[in-house]
Amino acid sequence: SKAFAEYAKDNSLSLSEPEQFENIDGMGIRTVIGGKSYYFGNAKLLSKYGIENDRLNDANAIADEGNTLVYVADEKQILAIIGINDVIRDNVDELIKRLHSAHVEPIMLTGDNEQTAKKIAAQAGIEHVISGVLPAEKGNVIKELKAEGDKVMMIGDGINDSPALALSDIGVSVNSGSDIAMNSADVILMNDDLMKIPELISTSKATVRNIKQNLFWAFFYNCLMIPIAIGALRHFNITINPMIASLAMTLSSLTVIINALRLRGSKK
Image (cartoon, rainbow, N blue to C red; front, side):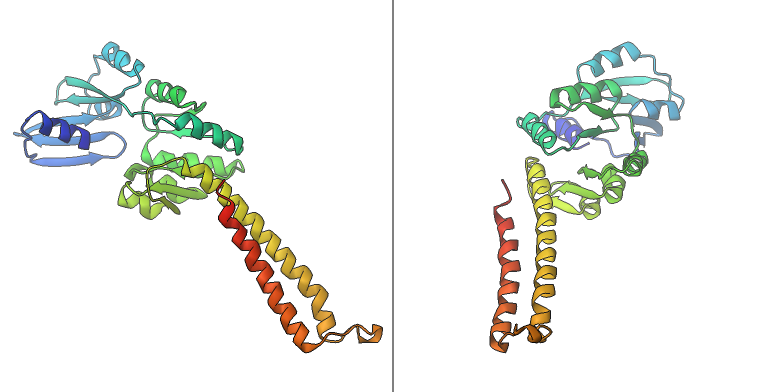
């Protein structure tokens, strides 16, 4: 919507103030101008209001070029079909390769039509595509993936992504995303650099590994030293000076801290 508003502004087009405005989730908008209804959205919006889609050939031609279709219609007919597309980031192929190297399977989950979604996915190197999904259905897809035993990370920045972000094991949003998406996410990237995603995964794995190491060390150390500290082994002439015991306890804590500090080098 911002892109259309900016285009109108750049081309000195006047924008009429709507008399009524209705947002239809996953489909588009309905507005009333001059007592007449206008519709702006996808093919599902046309079906909902009984508007015949008699421009299928034109729509398919635009979609085949990787564009998302936006229909403009009044109460009787389609007035225009607009093709919009996302710009593939320069380093997206490297991102997908790094995800595969980390044994992470990327899935494109989108409300776009199948033709557009598959074309963009092919450019990005993503094999698994789930298209034509309504906002509420995105959450159901996340539930299905989790039911299969998978750990699911959802990355999104729009209002429509918020249900899926909340339901995923880890929800990731970018700082430039909508407030609702950021509130639903567990992690917020402070910039739009998606190459931080593999770094996030590797750091998370290193953190879990480090926690397990520290728990094992604390358990092993205390199981070994507590019997000596309380004199349980004095019959074997194994005792420890209280001063040394205090120092040993401090060294144990320092060992855990030093091991945790190794995480600072886990980015790579």
